Amino acid sequence: MSTAADIIAERVRERVRREGADLAEHAGLAERYVSEEMRRYAEKALAGSQPLISDESSASREIIASLTGLGPLQDFLDDPRIEEIWINSPSRVFVARNGVPELTSVVLTETLVRDLVERMLQSTGRRVDVSSPFVDASLPDGSRLHVVIPDVTRRHISVNIRKFTKRIRDLGELVRRGSLTADAADFLRACVRSGHNILVSGGTQAGKTTMLGALLAAAPPSERIVTVEETFELDVSASDVVAMQCRQASLEGTGEITLRRLIKEALRMRPDRLVVGEVREAESLDLLIALNAGLPGACTLHANSARDALTKLCTLPLLAGRNIDSAFVVPTVASCIDVVVHCALDHQGRRFVTEIITPTGSNEAGVIPGNQIFARQHGVLTATGNAPTRTAKFAASGIDIGAQLRRMGTRS
Image (tube, rainbow, N blue to C red; front, top):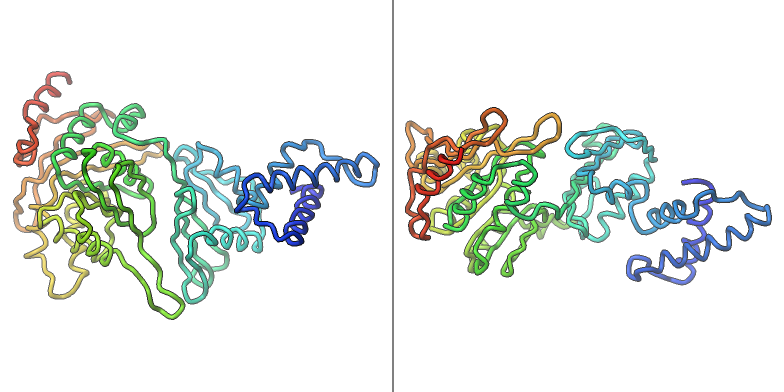
């Protein structure tokens, strides 16, 4: 901030301390304090005792952001084109704008970075310190915060803020953005409405969580959906939804709540559909057991392709213990997973679905075959002409998926 803005900001802080006010609790209080202090400053500046402020409106926004927001980062948080912000060091602040990363001109200080982290964690109930050098948390607007501190990092605090956006609410919006075609969206809606178990795969920042949220928007309105995540990211618009997230251990090492525990608790909450934000480890076993019991579900998973996602899902449950082997896991994955939707991010920042496959339900020497229903050809997601092998769930919901796919083939 400029010298004038620094002076005004400090005067507001002194007033807050003196009056015991809480700027976070009282909307508009920061604006009023800043306006009054700026007026006093301007009066002295006109008398020639202090330098004038060239742009009072800009200075006011800057001061309010430093008091109640996230200071130099606030403009990035307010910019709808920016999807992620990360700090590698005080002088290396990056943003991803429309999927494309760029180095900003913002230069912070070590003290300011620590202050920003403390301010962001204040409302989350989570902590980061020597005993717990990593933290994942959800900010009040739903954005995801991840922080790592030295000596896990070499020298500086590392901060990532993945912004939450409400712009994409359903499959129709993804169609309008070119992420998938109307035919593919219709097929996926039919899968959701008929209770298929859906695995959304892709790389980092490929839009997996966004796709999962859009799929859930197609669920029947009468469904009770229970979601479990490491930190809250999904925003489900259903009328009957319960969202749960993991919890860190306390300073005494107690009270930790893992994804495995959340999945087990979710099964006691009468869900019509169970959603796991992302499976990474042994919680995949608990999800498969739930799906194997006939409960519709969905999750995301990091993978290079749809078929790689199936292979990985056959491997992760083995982390649950030595008594778990592939003789149980592979057939369970083959019978439980109905649809795999693979997402990708290209070098220009565009996100799109590259393929949709439906496993056949069998496994051949540990490999799960699947029918590729949609594939990206010449830059367009196109119906391949293949049909799902298993159609019982479609039929039970009154959906003639074969006729629907034939109509798609006629249009293409």
